[in-house]
Image (cartoon, rainbow, N blue to C red; front, side):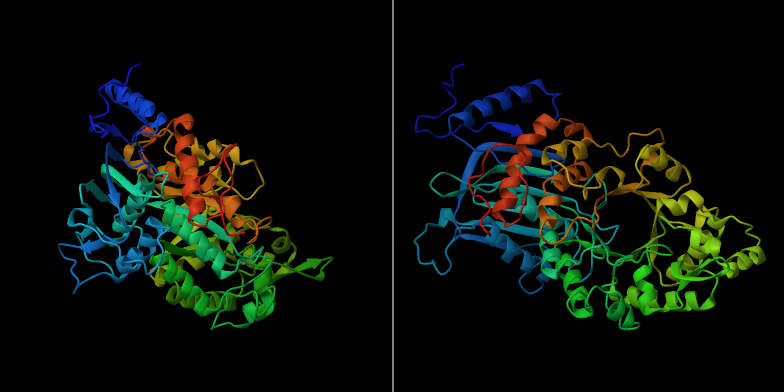
Length: 552
């Protein structure tokens, strides 16, 4: 085809618009997209994409040059210089470096004209800069980029952070290093409110800087929950001020491999400044071997041949001292972690030790449980649920608890993690009127080729038979990176870019993101952006990035 007429007399691009969407239902849109593809191939224009894909995005070939010397962020509406927002102030500094990574510091003496000034102005419907993000926080925003300025409006500061990330992904450099952004309009909001990543810091200790780096990458992919599986069987690295011996005896090392109260505050603060909630998990009654080193009477003594074997099993649910300890521990946890949610675990409880213990069996007979040890576990979980409820915390449990728990009305949120027909389990949970977090299809800890990212992209959390009201109970999903084979050396490349595939599934409209083939070039482009931001991201296939990873 001929391109005559697409370029003006002085080489300026005509104002042709395309959608940042993958919906193939618009024939006119496809014609525009094809024309734009041809133009891009001859190097006349570049249009950046945003990952995850916004709900609505209209961009134009009309572009504006950005110069770091004349670019600025500003406030309007309720936000003024006198009533600014500390969260956004910090974000402006971060994103200036992201927007202009090659800008030399101290080079502010260049001459510029008034029409070269470009300002991104932020306005909020609600001034909520001093709080923490929560499950009900709105992340909706509108971004409008036009000549000389851009406006970003959000209902909350957390939506503004998402909008800043989208704006940053629209900026690009030409071959001589000049910065540009195209005329763009975005209206955006997440498909699911809960978009989490689980890190396991018990099986391998993750240094705080590695966690903070992961939080940065999470913000780039618009994840908003850090599920901190902080303790488990192998080690207890959380340093409790109420029970200091839990970490002094239960951590891999009592000094070098612990998270102090200061470390935890640092992680929570770093996450908050990026719109990310920190959800702690203290899993019990199973997965608690490390707990017993600092609390000797907490675990159940196992018996063999009528005598103690010297081994210990799950938490002992028959002792009043158990619940006194748990009440004190969770009281501390509730003050340290500000989020209103807490994860109680409850998965993979081995009943063999309980079964071997004559005192446990006698307790079960007294309670009328017979030999049904799932009733004993339900008894324990009910007690812990009541403790956290008194602390005004919403509890999350693994699906095992739902499967055996008779009093399901006392449950709030169930995380589905088992393989098989996981949507069948999702359907059972929502039919019971409970909220669901889906994790089953997003277990990334096992080694695998990066090109299987499509496996994590082609997940449809709502593809089960149910009413609209039931489907609204699916509050989101979670990428899980368990620590058997993961430490700081491979944490980042094991997560990214596969976690980013899940991020788009949890954020974007399913009807606009059904095609792996269409997503692939956008994910390639996003991977290059992450590399330039210092994130170690595995390659998707043969190729290169203009700016390769440098921190080696």
